[in-house]
Length: 227
Image (cartoon, rainbow, N blue to C red; front, side, top):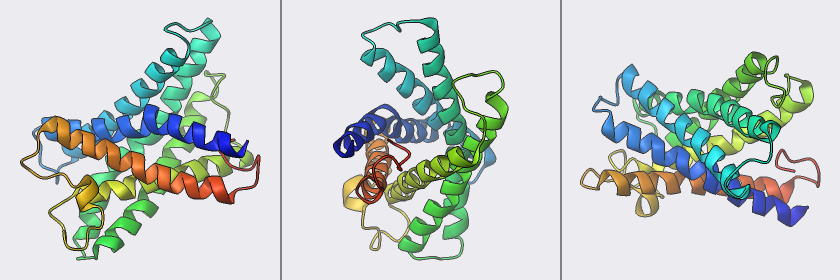
């Protein structure tokens, strides 16, 4: 069970976290809008949610050998994708306004990093809880909101918050001397759209992997959301 956590972690990284960052950055680069606008926030949020949705569906399709075994299996995959994408819309749309807000106070890089982690954790969790309320009546594979799944949803949200925090490292314009991630995932203006998106995907993948690894080694067997 313990080592299986790391296998599942890598599957989540490949199928959802890397596509999330990749699609967010791609949407932001291609939309042609200022990062200060609501349109930019919505465009990037929808882009990130699309990455999570299609990443999940395509990965599950790959695991199934190219076709789902039954309509119920297909429904489970698409409903789970919709559930996770709804949470992602909230955190993905929030990310740029949150970063802009925190940077406007002249916070240190680590201050923006931690603040983004906290605020996007709550944004993603809000999306998950909203999705449970909206979808559970008509989607049998989305469980209705309960106290038990509220704890697992929030634990997942914390790891997603980690991904959003590491994504702050892609911003090379804000306090670059304090940005401890700049040499790993920093995205510069002269980079191609594809390479910038690749680095962005790496940043969210790395952030989630770090946060989830801490959960994997600290939670008792059967108590972690990933079990």
